[in-house]
View 1 (cartoon, rainbow over the protein chains, first blue to last red):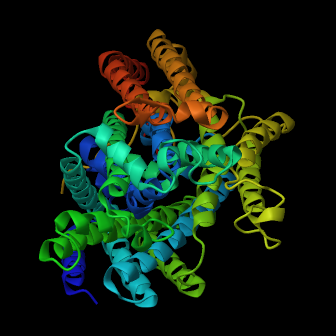
View 2 (tube, rainbow over the protein chains, first blue to last red):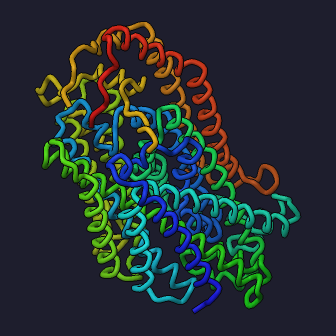
View 3 (tube, chains in turn red, brown):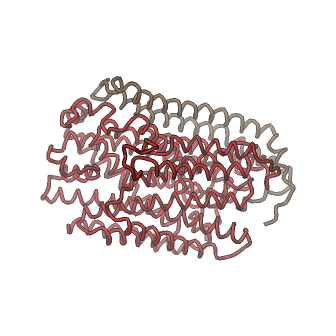
Length: 518
Length: 115
């Protein structure tokens, strides 16, 4: 056990629980629970959205991949910003104008409500749970590596904190935990960058040349091919990050927390700016770790590269065993831990909205007034959280989570993205089309991942679908099924007209305003 | 909540203000999405089809591939800035106009989004 690190972790948990207590006093109605009372400003929401993306997987994972495979590690951060421009241009304002709490609100606006809601809610819960298990396994492994705490207690502690934020503090606590963490992460990232640049004389040329010289690959370190991925693998991964991220429910529901479309737009703008800046920093940290760390560090960084950033912090602080080194690692580790906590909380909230608002209030109760939507949401959050924790404990620390992230992003890209885009923009689109698209995107993603090298029981060599992520097939299939379902169906007369959706979603006419302060 | 029928959505959609808004926004969004996905495809194509070119150092140790990746951010930031500017200068005003027409036409505020 490492005392400094445990103290840093405990401090962090104390602060975030304090935020939760504050938020719980302001969280009663459904609008407060799901949408923070629409009280979050554009810049605040931009930070929270950036926080959702700056997960442990991007902070530790991307820097680690750049440390290990050089240029190939840079491809994922380089393409991910595409998703946020797509969100700004296609979804942000329209979501805020035409919906209240969930992605299904917007999708079912003019389609037959119950089937569309049921399908969308199912894919939302699936995406959230898969992502959640991946994050929790990562959390357990990471905390074990950083503090010496073993896997099971680490997962349970992370899970309990996550449940406390969501169940008691709703979206308000989840958002502020995310904002605090985003600020911490940006500051720590900037500090690491300055440290690296100081060591390389503030000369990028020295940084990259030294990194290449220190890597076993030499000059090839700065060229494609370091990860051993085939071209199709690279495209499938790039599509998952560029298109799938744009349709992740836990990111899209953040646009319901702002007062109006103008703030929704501004939050997407802030998110694009902050995430881009963060990715530039990950490049300096990742390549910088290779340039600055002594060659012996390669062993400690590990096969996944996840410890490149913490080791860099230790080195910049004065090296192993020194007070500075120990303190720096403690800070970086605590921030990584905060990242996991904030991201898993957002995931649980998105799933609980799908269960309580979509499945319970509008599919089961058919929209009849019932005052217990918030209570159901808290219960659903607790249930989903517990299920995810149990799955994580059963799978254990050696469970390969990479395919889960791929699957979650592929379902978002193949099932959610086509249906949401067409529901907002295509006049002829029908309920049958939406259901066909969602089901086809989901099934294709699951089938492809089972047939892919990371899961196929017959061994990676003989995998029938020889590509890493299912997106290559799932996205075209999702769009095709939406189109086929629409042209083959004979239904007419949607519940509300496309004209109403267009006018409302583009002008904000009649969108729910911020409730008066109380 | 019952939905009053006074709002004539089709007439609103056909109003000049809304046509201006949807047309102007649609044109920008289409151009921007094509540029964005096009540049994304160029990046992947260079990485996949011309790894040697992607690995050529241009300046300060940065390779063609690295700079192409970095330029994705440049494009994303540029499109974001353009869209926010257009929205504040043109689209917000047009949205306002459509909402005003709706308020005059129906004599009441439009019903709230209820789901």
